Amino acid sequence: MRLAPLLQRCSVIAALALAAGCAPLPSRHAVIGTPAYTPAYTPAHMPGYTPSPAAQAAVQSLPDAALTAQQRQQWLDRVSWGTNDVADAELQRLGLKTWLAQQLRPNLAPLPGAAQQRIDALEISQRPMSAIVQELTAQRQSVQQAASPEDKAQRQQDYQRHLNQLAADAQRRFVLRALYSPAQLQEQLTWFWLNHFSVNLRKADIRAWVGDYEEQAIRPHALGSFRQLLAATLRHPAMLRYLDNASNAAGHINENYARELLELHTMGVGSGYTQADVQELARILTGVGLDLRPPDAPPPRVRPQLRADYRRAGFFEFNPNRHDYGPKVFLGQPMHARGMGEVDEALDRIVAAPATAQFIAHKLAVFFIADEPPPALVQRTAQAFARSHGDIAATVATLLTDPEAARFGQKFRDPLHYVLAATRLSLNDQVAANVTPVLGWINRLGEMQYGHETPNGYPATQSDWDSSGQMTARFDVARQIATRSAVLLRADPQEPLAQPPYTALSALACVRQRLPYWSQATQATLAQTKNPADWNTYFLSAPEMMYR
Image 1 (tube, rainbow, N blue to C red):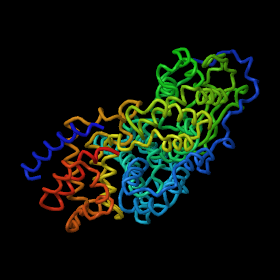
Image 2 (image 1 turned 180 degrees about the horizontal axis):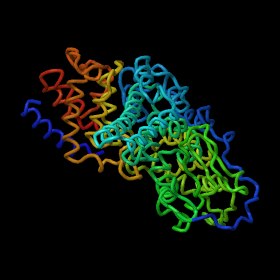
Image 3 (image 1 turned 120 degrees about the vertical axis):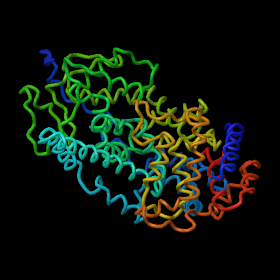
Image 4 (image 1 turned 90 degrees about the horizontal axis):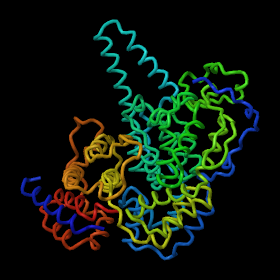
């Protein structure tokens, strides 16, 4: 942890602030009659949010002794989006073993009523995605039917506004859950996997899909089966649009998704697969695409000998007319032509590859533990992934309870972690009526949800987020949260702010508990402040607040 340079940098920023006062199908169909492929990891074998024996065994390896106040803060900073008095009291009441066991298999405990009401009021909560898609289709078509250039411009503007609103709904829902859900580990892992299987809302109409992508493809599997998670992302319109597999067809191969699936989602670059494997996987994925027509629309015309291979579920479609049924060799083994069965078999091979276990284990360790996690810790985590066939809860439990993970406070907070931690602390048990300012703070610091331009997602290491410009911006954001957190409590921006418009952080038990463990320099800076607003500002911008 590079506290000294950060301390110096933050001191300079603080001093300045004080001074300022503030192809048709091939004809090779001889093997089409091969029996259907049965995936190795069928739902009966896939652990979900039921007790995972491996995860629970890892939890039971923890000591029985009660946690100190400092230890509670450390565990909350690692497992949750940030501590506050409510979270600290819950961990103290339950004890570490029970609390962590619940986090690893959340019972989907409800959010506070007011927070759930905010979510329920969103369009993405009130309308099924099929209805939204039909309306967007009608809006898009109406643009071309406009009677005048002015009318066309207005219709286009309405369409774009609708797309923007759907994306903003998804962002607000995510923030409300991150701030208030009791299932904090599930919330953190939902973000981890969203960033791992990253899509960019700026492309095409993906703004309309990001909320459904999180809700249907990511969140249900965040602590479940990696194999199911991988399949869910593969079948979702957001991913198929973003990485262009919707246009991948026999004779018109598009390798984008196949390449990123291997390089970024599973095995990792340099892990042993070849460019030939990318090309073969792209062929395997031909025909995997979308059908955005109403659910009761008739199926497309399919060649008689291929009709049994046609699949549609929701908006996902496997169209055998577009599939390359030629012989293939993938990851060193032949692949029989089975249509969608080829995709299932390919995913099974990928998930079972040792490189996938290693890649996922390392990325989880970097996210939770340290930028350069101990190799032995990563290896044990990879072994847990492999033994459990990709049980995410078992993998994460092994990581979090490993003795080599006992060094806390090594992870520099990326902007999302920082803003959510500061907001959770400042609001404590108060439910935000308007989280739009939170989205603004996150965006200002450069980590807009669903907004990374390239499919590798946002970085998770300190060197990517600790520049002087970032730290100056963080100080400004800290000051806004510290002195005007009450803006989050009013639904109407015209309402007068509560007075004072902030929580006095020094009055919170969890704040008082951590101060003795902070540096003398930070404590001296806080002692010199003249009022609670300044105290809040320098507490939230302290070097120690940058770590979790």
